[in-house]
Image 1 (cartoon, rainbow, N blue to C red):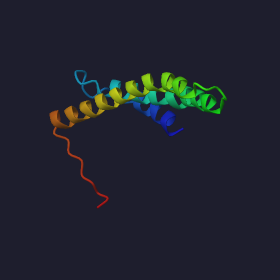
Image 2 (tube, rainbow, N blue to C red; image 1 turned 30 degrees about the vertical axis):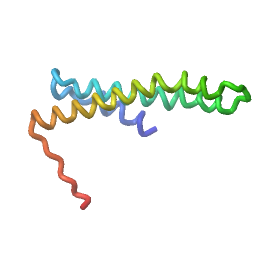
Image 3 (cartoon, one colour; image 1 turned 90 degrees about the vertical axis):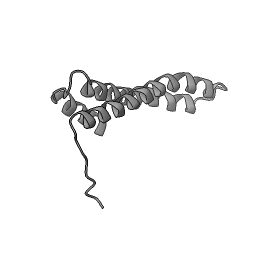
Length: 97
């Protein structure tokens, strides 16, 4: 639910820098995460619940491609975030300490 509530907020924001495309990369990441939660994980549970002997192989085939894509999208978001912070000299102060 948290993921789905963030997507409209992200969509409503303007792209900060068209060359870096931070918003675009974040939307891709959040969308992939949403697909995992709403599709692949549900199917994964069904596979684990089944009595078939090839559950591990089926689970791997189902999850690994999307998990790899999610990992790449996450790295792309972090890279874009670093570029934005560097280019626009944005600093983040941790106020929890």
